[in-house]
Length: 434
Image: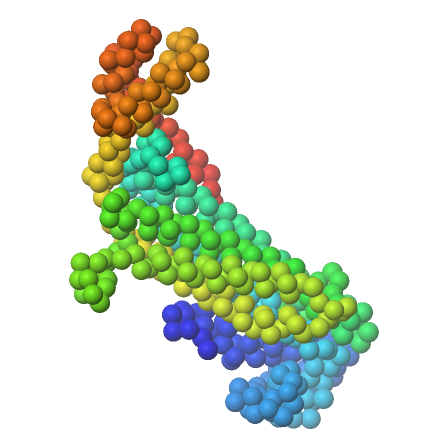
């Protein structure tokens, strides 16, 4: 069952109706290619094109007897086509139709994912530019490190998503292949020219070689690219969750009028959208593992991959499509608290400038080891005694013997710390093509 959060566009691609539509599209293209090759009567190809149709309920009814979906499909179509149906599916095996048609679905679904990525990246870019110079503390190991800007954090997300775009585009090309080479890939019943003709009409690339199926390393690459993209969204959502903690309070996902956070605590505004994104990423990641296992089939083919793909292909696309739309809304509507960011930046009493002081001492001839010892002892004292770090440095005879008060003041200049932000923005937003 297609989940209720599925977009109409993505849901349509993975509906039973669309699956059989693409099967019929392949069958029609094959009949016409064979007619051009003199294998099938032209009037038969015309009948299949003009009369070919089906009813999903009828296919399901026939399948209850045949226990074979492709035979049920061709039988249902034949009921519409009439006598010319003896040329329907001529020289083909089931996987010729299923795998070639599935390529059409995957290609179309990739296009929706790429459109979703483009929309999300535009939303992130807008917020990044807005907060290009919004100063905040950078954290490593969850601990205050050095100053940065919130815009830089968003630029980082944008750059990663641009790589996701490249991966999905590449995977789209990798899976956009068809095959009509028969039961073991030998073209025993149809020449390669027919396959080439069909693929050309469907805008697919013929598989250079196949067994009964298109090889599943292609599908594994596709699901892997979707999983990496989901993990990128997970990473961004996890960051918002962390910054929304009460103790930090720098960013908050949108909270709509009338929304409720807890049945027991009316004050709660929980990051539920971001938590859902983190959870959904686990599903796509798990599907990537299943896709990898699908690559190893017995000899020229078994069907151990088939049942898995009926789940992981639509589910991975549907989930990621939902994640992209949901996170775009989060980014567009997230609330940023610059004053809280500045407050947290200053909370550690200036020790986050310790690295700059260290470099200033080294620049003036102090050994790195000695400089590190002097700076660290003052930083530890600032932590332990809750003293202002800069004042401690100005009172330290070892340090003031090397640095003038103006030098120390300069080391605490936030504008100097952030002077290359514009350079980074130039590299991210003018060199990356969406």
